[in-house]
Length: 104
Image 1 (tube, rainbow, N blue to C red):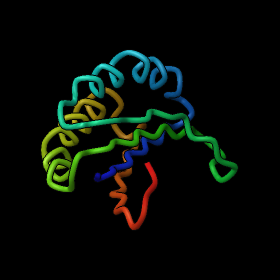
Image 2 (image 1 turned 120 degrees about the vertical axis):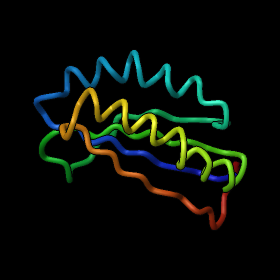
Image 3 (image 1 turned 90 degrees about the horizontal axis):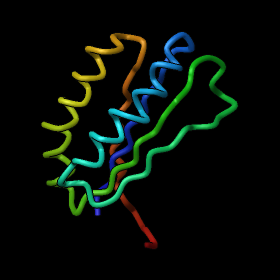
C-alpha cells in the first residue's frame, strides 16, 4: 500500500467557485483514476488556518510504483486543469505518506 495526500488551499475570494469545482469536476477526475484503489476527499478543519480553506484528497495505491506513476502523469494533468481555471488562487501541496506501520 502506498498513500499520497494532496491538499488544495483556496483563497477566500474563490471559495464558492472552488466548492462548485470540487462537487462537479474534481470528483469526476478522481472517480476515473484507474490506479487509485481507494480515496477520501475531505474538507480540512483547523484552527491554524485563518483565511481561505483547505480541501484534502487522500489517495491509496497498490504500491509505490503506481503512486510514482500517478505523480508523474495524472497529478500533472490535474494540476494543469486546476491552474488553468484558478491560477494562483488555488495552491496544491503534495505529501507522500510512507507507511511505517498500519492497521487496515
